[in-house]
Image 1 (cartoon, rainbow, N blue to C red):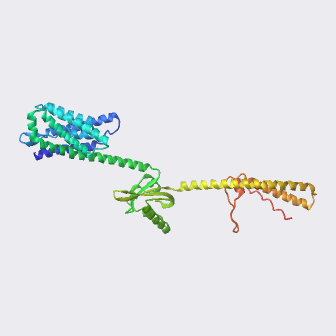
Image 2: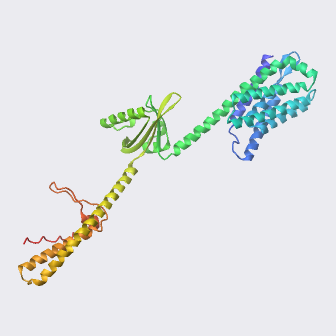
Image 3: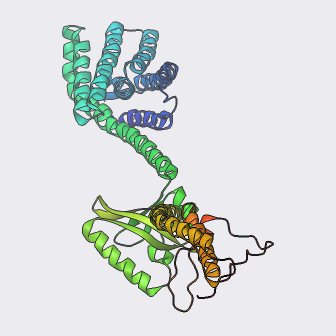
Length: 430
C-alpha cells in the first residue's frame, strides 16, 4: 500500500471532519425544512469528499487500486441519518457513471447499500440514546460485507480480485470508518457539552437567588450567577478565583462563627443559616439567608452556596409578629373592657341615684360629681380598648416598665400644629 496515497486519503477524511465540526450546529432546528436543508448540506459536502476519495485511489500493487469511497457515505449516514447518506451516495454514483468502465453497476450497488446500512445503524444508535462502539464496529463490518458482496457480483473474476485485496479493505474499514468515527463522535460530543454548558449558564443566571460555587480545598470561588453579582456589587470576573474570606466582615467573633459553620457543613454535607452577615462591594453589611451543600465531582468537592437578602424575610416576620401582637392585645383589651363595663355601669347607676338625694351645696354632692367624672374617664379609656389599630407603648419613667399606650394605639397621634388636648385635673381626695 503506497504511503503517500494512504496519507492523501486520510487527509481527505480529516477534511470532512473539519467540515463537519463547523457545520454541526447549522440548521439544527426541529423544523422539517431545517432537517431537509441540513441533510442536503452534509450530503453535498460529503458527496464531494466521496468523489475526492474515488479520485485519490490507493495503489496496493502494480495496477491494483482501492479507494475509500465507502468511508464518507458510512460516516455521514451514521451521524446524520439515511437522507444525508443517500445524497452522498447519489453524488458518488453520478461520478461513477461519468467515468464509466467495467463494474459500474457494482459500484453503484456498493454505494447505495452502504448508505442504507449506515442509515439503519443511525436509527439503531438513536434508539440506544447515542452512538456507541458497538454501532461503529457493526457499521465497519457491514461495510466490509457489502464490499465483498459487490465483488462477488462480478463472479469468479471479482472474487479472485477481492482475494488479493481483502486485507487492505479490512484495514480501510477499520481505520477509515472505525477510528475516524471516534473523531466524529468527539465533535458531536463537544458540541453537546457546549450546548449543555450554555443551558446550565442560562439556568444559573436566571435563578432569582444568588448562587456561588466554591472549591472546598482551595476555598476559591469557582463560579457565580448574575444574582450574586447584583447583590454583592462585583462582576463575575472580580469574584471568580478569589478567596471567600475576603468578603467577610472584619468582626473576629463573626469570623470565628463562620469557621465553626464551615466545619459543621463539611462534616454534615448540608447547612442552613439565617441572618448571616455579608459585606458587599460598597462596604455595607447586610443580613443574608444561606443554604450550603457539599457535592463531589471528578474527585473534588465543591460547596454550592445559595443565598439571598434577608431584609424581605425579616420585614415579613416583623409584620407577622406585629399583627400577632395586635390581635392578642385586641382580644385581651376587649375582654378587659367587657369585664370592666359591667361593674362600671352599676357604680354609675348608684352614683346618679345618690346625686338626686343629696343637696346641691352639700359636700357629699361634690364627691359624687368627682366620682361620676372619674367613671366617665374610665368609660372613655375602656372604649379605646375596642378600637386598637396598632401597638404603641409608653415611655418608661423612673424605672417603670413600658406598657400599652391606649390613646396612641387607638387613634392617630395629634399633629405638631394642633395643641394637645388638656388632661382632666385629678379630683381632690375626699
